[in-house]
Amino acid sequence: MSRKPEEDASKQIISVVLALLESEGYDAVQLREVARLARVSLATVYKRFPARDDLIVAAIEQWMADNSYAGVLPPAADETLYSGLMRVLRYIFEPWERNPRMLEAYHRARTGAGGQRLDAQGMSAMLPIAAQLVAGAEPAYVEDIGLILANMTYALTGRFVDKTLEITEILPILERAVFRLTSNNESAAAAARLGRNAGPFTVDPSLASPYNPNPGTPGA
Image (cartoon, rainbow, N blue to C red; front, side, top):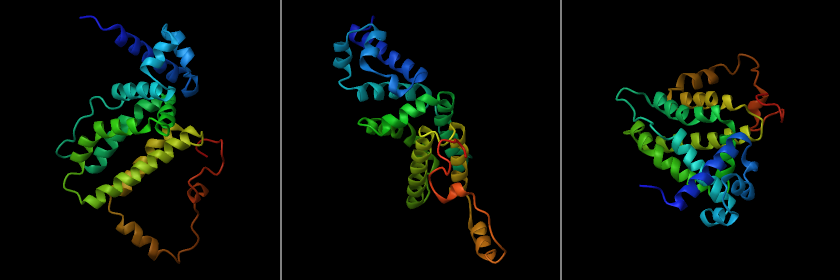
């Protein structure tokens, strides 16, 4: 059975937007240019996507469904919380590492009018797996992990978009956070108290602020 012309037009429009996002970036998506490349009228674009934000979010939803959310497996019986969280994070971020412009597009779209749609899509795709990973854990602990990782992810992707962090640095930073969140840090914390009289401790200046001390220099 052949597809309806409306479906064909929508798929062609989304395909053009994805090509623009991947090759030229978020700002390259302009409705007149999309209509020209998709070989449809501007009225046809507006009929299906009333605003530019709607069009970009729809394209990103499809990209995420195809590249980051499809085929994520539930945890094995012996999978640790650390391993499971990192497996899910890698599944999401590794496609972005191969397509950095899509992470920029995702971050910018998520802060716009359609951001809730992207959040809802991610929750729908990943919540069943996350729920199995943390089954039986104290609810407050689970809430804290979610809060910390959500805010860290938002901050790190923002730094990537601001060009103060390389995209390949995001996963290692998140991995350090996941390790701390899922490990027993009591001995490390106790050693800090015992070592207060051991002499000066050198601190990386970048730890003193959530902002890069050398703007414009990724990874500085």
